[in-house]
Image (cartoon, rainbow over all chains, first blue to last red; front, side):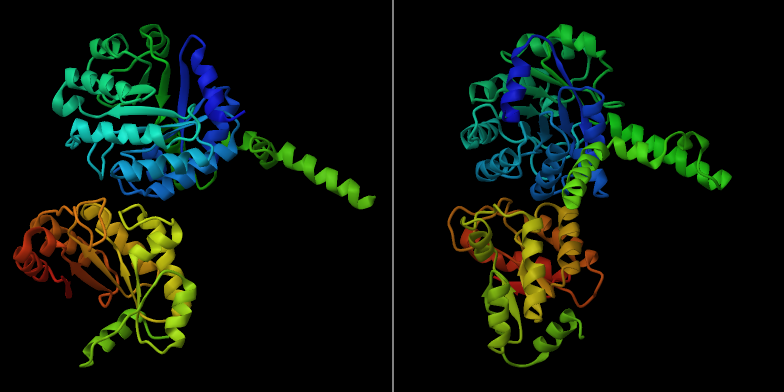
Length: 289
Length: 183
């Protein structure tokens, strides 16, 4: 079954889907193996893996290539960051076609002026609502599978206020968006109010150290959110683990002992060694004929 | 082999007009080279038509343009002047754009003062960035190159939009070290 359709089925069940953020095949596979129903592709993580900050430097081509790599690494549906849709309604049309044809199940498109900035940074510039809504309409019209999820994200909380964010969310639903992502609410009251005031499904962005207070995921589910994404979870964990390992080598001139608990082959098993070994055996037998 | 950037600078010292036919792929690149031209141009409009089958309304990404430019530079062996549209954003994007084009073996790029997504220079409905923003982009472009012979061509689309103010915009850019005007 098409993974956009799989995602719709999961969303039609009660409860909230938790989607940690991946930025490559390793993170995607670990998220799937940990049993999460959904994977999210983080633009900040994708930028970082290319060696850039999340300042709108990465092109749509690079984002789509990374999304395709992630969809191929796992069998669960992928929701991807698609920034501003990379331009006007024509660019958005192309962006939706590119992501959809790569097997991505849904994307979010935001109302920042391009080049965008991470949602939890200051000085974001916001697009006029009419211009943004025409992009949402273009995105909805561009998908070939009606199950492909179009998530409208507004970044206007910081500059235009909470009420405008709600207004933009509801206007986006009327323009055809399937789900609303209000970026960077500033208090727990706002986090709680979003699913009440938005007249459709809502996505919660859980950013460590960002502008939104820490929300327990069971509380988020009770508030009525349908998806919670944790974009930076694994990137931050990786950076800390990498720094620790590097530091250990610099200090003690030997790899840290806790890394010796698994053999190379055990590590390969996390990344499909059994599957590939089965293929190897199959053709080895046929050779012997 | 002589650096294509240096070669282009030498060609420009000659009194006659340098002719650079525009191509969209390696086939065209080979033909231009075998016809004996000294330089070659990569057209963004043609690249959009060739790679997407779509018009020149800013649908190609910087990644796609650089990828195409790299093939043309290699197949032609000639100094390549490449369309780099608006530089694909603000000064940070322009910096990355120049780094990518330079690494692809391009000898020169032109960067224009349209709002992104841009439109073909000969279409209606173009909107411009301010002369100050353009000058900042040009400064960022000049600072980004590693090879000082890599040429930055400042293009202004202002004639259609603001008639003769094109001149003042171009002058601002010249002060910021752009080497050639494209009006």
